[in-house]
Image (tube, rainbow, N blue to C red):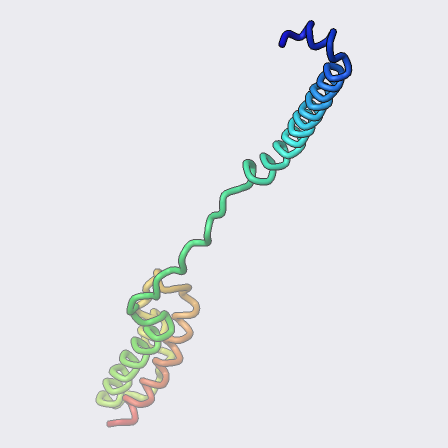
Length: 142
């Protein structure tokens, strides 16, 4: 049936049909407007929340355990001072000299210092304390 014929013969039906189509179009337009509005509102939020976030960088792993290292500064000074003092004390005792450990060259020069291990005053003090102990032991043995 043609639209003109329907309008002439069944005017109420055509109006109902047009009203139904109008309502349907109105609902489609409203749904479309809501969808566009939701997209406009959520897009920036999603962009800010997900797009601009900083990437996660995990912390670096811990350093490996230290390898077997040589003696520390104080250990080196203690060993060097005691050995030097013991040999100097034994020599002075063999020569029959009086004990004077603070007047020896080794006591003042503190040989064996390695600057890579630490500060000189720490080495010097540890060396001299060990030197005096070693000197007494070496001198009193003979």
